[in-house]
Image (tube, rainbow, N blue to C red; front, side, top):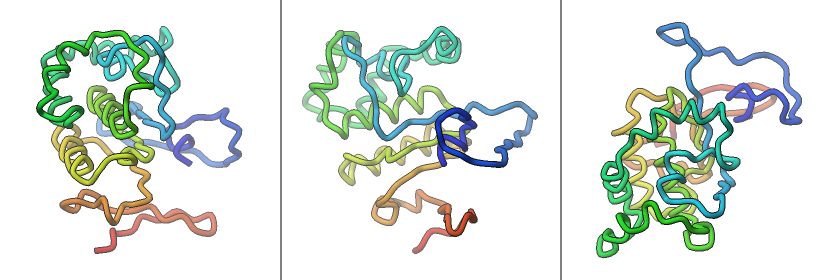
Length: 195
């Protein structure tokens, strides 16, 4: 369903109908999808994983045009965001400056929560009008979930966030979720979150 929301046609899932977005300026909004299974290419830097990251690997030529604005994020801004999301514990923050541009096989060194934090920062740095986040909080402890939700509210206040979360009730800190999509008998409805 998420692939259809982002208007992906050739993914082998049969569907009828169309997805239409109405925006204030009448243009097609940028829709960014952070997938559940995140690919981490080998021999990359932390900076590349946030600012040049595309879910299925390194960007194509077309994607580089899309990511041009994100490249303007300074190293210091990125370090501050990594500190804000507590990518490392505070006593290891000195490593961020050292490792930001260090090419490594990060997949072997990062926890599931750290990978999700990089994916979250990638979404934030893109600042899409619509963000589809598939299990973005999976692998994070509750403190990290609260931090992540606070950052989404802070940095993407005008973005529509469609989040798949199988633990939404547990992860609904400060009424983060405003509603839920209910699918039943080929019908889609939006309902209020259970309190």
